[in-house]
Length: 435
Image 1 (cartoon, one colour):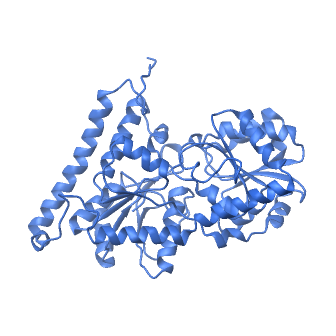
Image 2 (cartoon, helix red, strand yellow):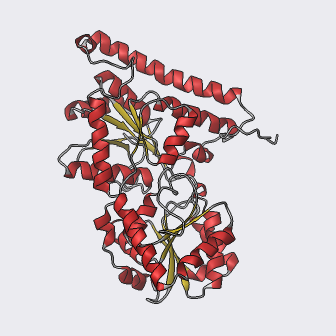
Image 3 (cartoon, one colour):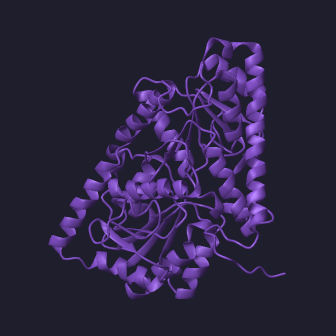
């Protein structure tokens, strides 16, 4: 159950699609419950689409309006054994209700630092961020197990109070798929010379991705390297801001905004790059970083959770600490100026990193987790025990009421915590708000 799915392009949608693909290849069945999106296929196998508000608050997200009866009928036909939730609200609440009424275990993947996205919600404030953090922690503690995409996120949510069993399982990359691309054809189509130096970036073009720092650093780099080009793959509300910032540096004529790319076209784009640049600090894992490395591209990125598990400074690229555009530009230059022997060592490290994040390896870890929660080996005391009495109509009705109460209590608790600390930001430091 996920609030984002294809054709929406983003980390969660790609993670769900990737895992579902490999599960099916390994002989399992997967039912995906997701909102409607513009441009979605007319016919989809084992996908249930929910009516949704599209382009919520001028974003490229859809907000689903769950229809429990429709979901229930599909799941009854499907005979689900595990419910996997990918969001702590909306269809995430539906996941808890569905699991409770059927005595099924719930696994939740903590994909996102949700407090970094509250600017999409009217009334954004430190109290809102506090509320979101407490809501997510409470949701995690209603689940049988939580998947953290990186060790950094596992540590963070433990500090915040998550007590449910937590396992680190990143979304893997199909190494074979990204290893073979036609970068020359991509360059030719974009009018980029074969000998040009290409800095690339892939991702949603939105404020939370720290694009201003990235573009300032790349702009500085391009100004010093007249042979360099900047390929940006993605779309979003910040697209024109990227161009405007590079115009300030006088290098906008060397920007290539391709829009969203998928399939072989995306793989070709990676292969057209010499360096992959990344500045986001809101990721729980670096999916595009591992994709770039599977295509043989070294990465220059800002040190942040989910990034530092992939990028090793001066080994498979550069990891820049802080928010300094000059340091980021110098890191790009470091990669370009490597001598042949050092370049080969970096290339070997890039390939080794991609191998560690193979999709089949991470999918098997997730399947092992499903087996554990199905067997009850991770369930906590007080969760549904599956005894015969629990299968009665009375017990099922009681569980539904209980699940609604737990969801409401979690929301109430999060509201209470946020209102008790109105002058604190998510890290617990005092703030001063203007009138």
